[in-house]
Length: 109
Image (cartoon, rainbow, N blue to C red; front, side, top):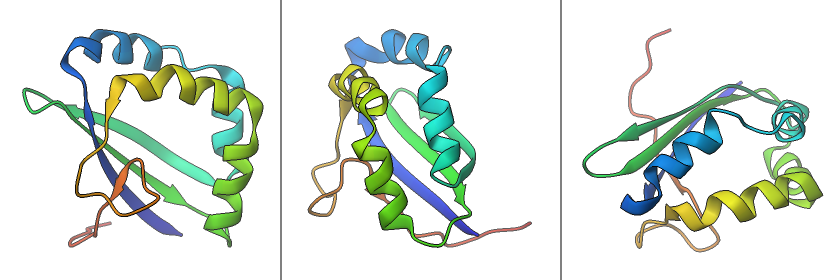
């Protein structure tokens, strides 16, 4: 298992929309998240900075392949098309990232 943490900005004018969307995530999207070996997935919002922090456990053996599977799923792509306009990616993210990856510096289990 690998614990993953990521961060992205959230546009001020989209906060309520983003909360509403995530209060009722589409069942097909949730099923794909599980099918791609992601467990214990949470997204936190930090205001007033308007930063989203996601954390999840990856329990698969090939993260890149699972993320490619997710990205190829039509329903997930439709969901992303609704959510991505709400987000404001960090300018310091690595090339190819939307959510910026984070280094885990502490864990107590």
